[in-house]
Amino acid sequence: MTTPFHCELQVALSAVRQAALICNSVQAAITDEVLEKKDKSPVTVADYSSQAVICRAISAAFPQDPIIGEEDAAELHQPENHEFLEKIVAELSSAGISETNAENACHWIDQGGAKEFSDRFWTLDPIDGTKGFLRKEQYAVSLALIVNGKIVLGVLGCPNLPFPADELIKGTLYYAVTGQGASAIPLNQDQPAIPIHVTTTGEFSQSRFCESVESGHSSHGHSQEVAERLGIEKEPRRLDSQAKYAVVAQGDAEIYMRLPTRAGYREKIWDHAAGVLLVEEAGGTVTDIHGKPLEFDQGYELTNNQGVIVTNGPLHAGLIEILDELAINH
Image 1 (cartoon, one colour):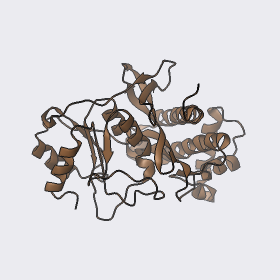
Image 2 (cartoon, helix red, strand yellow; image 1 turned 120 degrees about the vertical axis):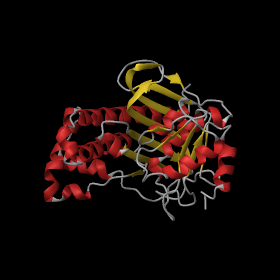
Image 3 (cartoon, helix red, strand yellow; image 1 turned 45 degrees about the vertical axis):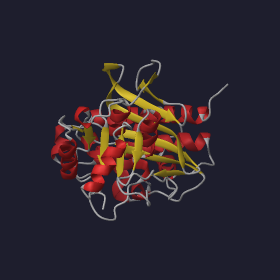
Image 4 (spheres, one colour; image 1 turned 60 degrees about the vertical axis):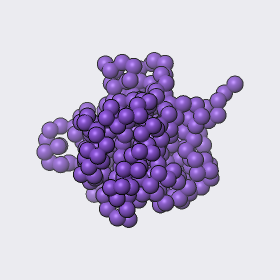
């Protein structure tokens, strides 16, 4: 007997794996000269190629499903971006994608152009953590399926995170299906999946938090203030992208706080959906900074939520309480 969402999971795993491997090959070719010039062309090529691969696969298997993605192909139609488009076509072709040409590449990218909520839709971040990607550090390819406002499936490709069961294997594909737990498999090796779990510690003094490398994504000052108040002494683990969700889900940290950096800002659903389900199915808890569940039925933003708080579970209520006391959530 097949489990619920079995077909969706197989398609999603295959698509995210293929996209992550394309991104990895683009990242491997980044030179010091590119970094010195602050040239963002590699991430542009990888971003669009990743979205094209995943949207192509989802649309072929589930043609009725809208996809809320981060990118669209409008800029690629501009004459000055012809070189980008050629590079994207080359990446897709070298990955063995049949029918690859400029027109099809743009068409596949634009299949991720939905913006409104629907009863069943996918949300995609083709490269989450662009600065980490350019630094040859952590980034993620993130895909989630949302049905009736609930995340039912999430896949997170983390090409630079070691496989939890064997640190020598670089690159991990994490996935979760509602009610079925969270798992990890090597990105580029044929090995069985292993279950992953959050830690069970209820002591803040024994815990560790992870946060963005970029302080623009979350307030590092507030994080430090919270850590001091709670008696957290371990150095925070700083890494880009939804890889932070994976780090909490597999028990390498207990807390991830995405604290608001400016009034009125609302998080985008593609930055969180896959990671949220991964942590929850690994036994953890995810809410906004007020302790409210995240609402994925508002379109492409978490309109009714402020910030995101991720924990192993036992620490959650105490953390929300401290945020309230410090007035960080006002």
